[in-house]
Amino acid sequence: MSQKHEEMIGLILQEEEEVIGLHRQHIDDMVELIKQEMVLLNEVDKPGSDVDEYVYSLDAILAHKMEIISLLRGRLFNFRDHLKTEEMLSKKFYEERGEVFDNLDLDDKEFEQK
Image (cartoon, rainbow, N blue to C red; front, side, top):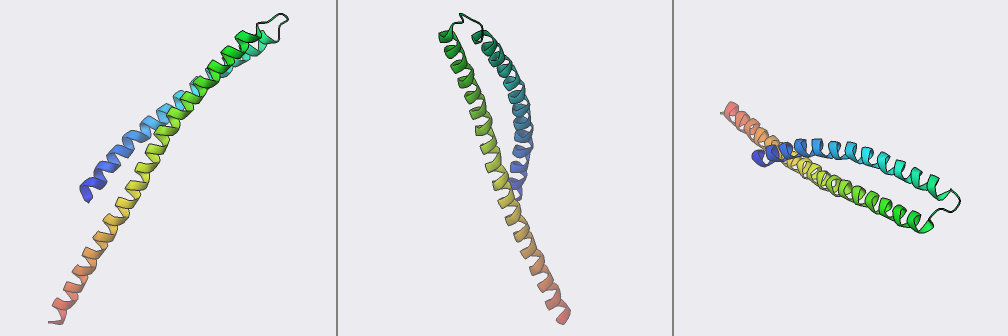
């Protein structure tokens, strides 16, 4: 039980760094994509602009945003599952540890009575 718990903690620490890094990258990507959207809006506001190009480009940007969000959410859900697993393992570990100490206390009391 202890080894599984230790391995899960190691995995969680690694994933935590990865999730935070992905989140930072997500923010950078979103800022860049918003800048591209602003350029699109400025272009489509001009007389004689190509609305078809605007629609195509906006759809590509939105699809890219969805892909980035989906990737981050997938990693986040996986990380959250590992956090829940670690919490469960930790609870079991400390419950088992408590039972061992309870048994030791009982043994000590029995020893003292003899």
